[in-house]
Length: 139
Image (spheres, rainbow, N blue to C red):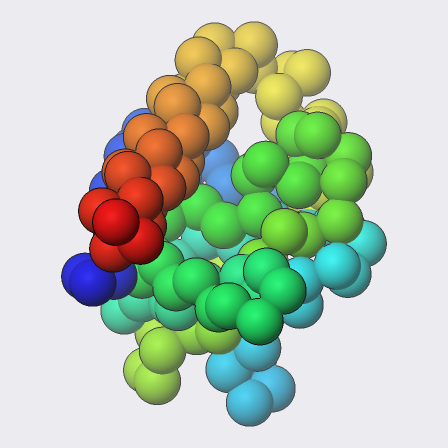
């Protein structure tokens, strides 16, 4: 089974606004966040990539996030814990923005809401494709 990839669908203007309000980080051991952890930040992968994993029972699902991906949006927007664990690839350049700063950005710049909706739609599409691929493997 192939590992699905998140498309880099971040609006360039949204990316610049996130970078302008955030700090570049060097994640300890590459971990950005853990599945089940309270969502307090989102992460923008400026260069390199990240691996996302989700534990579901005895199965582990993986997704690759490429350069230009914004990670943690579903958790931040839904005010829920992270549903996956994100690990930055070696040499990735990652920016972290607090959920408070992100919500302030969306309130101050309402047109950014459309960009966020496109990201969420892309994530739904990847999840549906992964489910479709999984159903083919179980037949």
